[in-house]
Length: 123
Image (tube, rainbow, N blue to C red; front, side):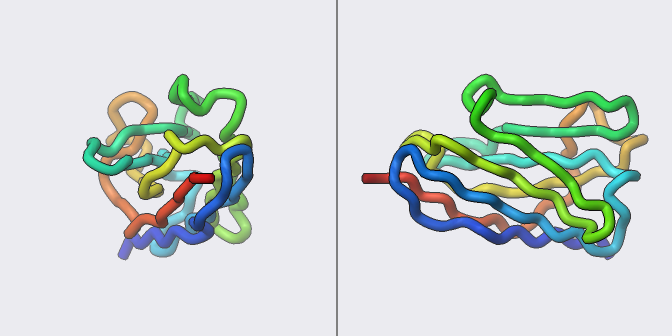
């Protein structure tokens, strides 16, 4: 059974940093497209960073370029999101997502989701 569990959210001041983790169970990361998504209050969930090992394609939302990076540790079957220079507009619930490579349309997954972790940026 595919499961994703995010952690690492919290409250920070503008300019601060956080690292989110997403532990995957029931599947191996290299066979799945993985991504991080964000849902701000009153808005739809949006893709912010995605990676598909099928073709090595990456997606970065313009709003996070130069500030957020994603990485994976295959030994731990864990994906990370490093967020630097956080701003109030980064506030939201952050989700990790996964989808088998052969089913992905584009780069970002749209199948399995974690429960989300809250990130709040305010002074």
